[in-house]
Image 1 (cartoon, rainbow, N blue to C red):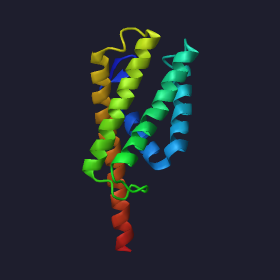
Image 2: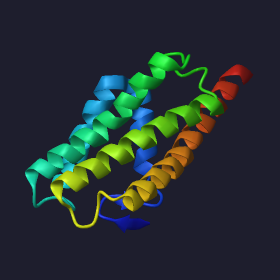
Image 3: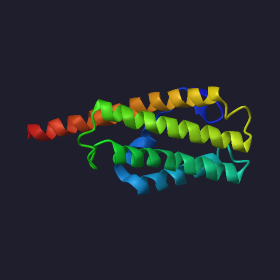
Length: 153
């Protein structure tokens, strides 16, 4: 559900970005940045290499910065075994603020259409939260099911 250039009401890749950086740290961020560059370059932002590089760096390193901040300030095991709903919400909120803010700041600097506004920030923030909640909750549920299945044997 696209609202504008790079802005969506529900953005499932936000959840994947957060999950990959929580699990794989820097290699996850580098993989996301690389994939985001390719998607941007061959997609909506292909007209400008500088814009593609900025979008890809923000896409990869906003969740990594959120991971760094969360790991430094919230007691969370490196294997995420103690990731509960409260800690998950903290991770999601920090990530959504960083990602939305940095993307909209970059879009404003690059002068892309009417992006970079507070309204676009809010839509992207909400979209990142909803997408991340949906995907991370599904992954956590799947991991919990795997743990229960292993205990049964």
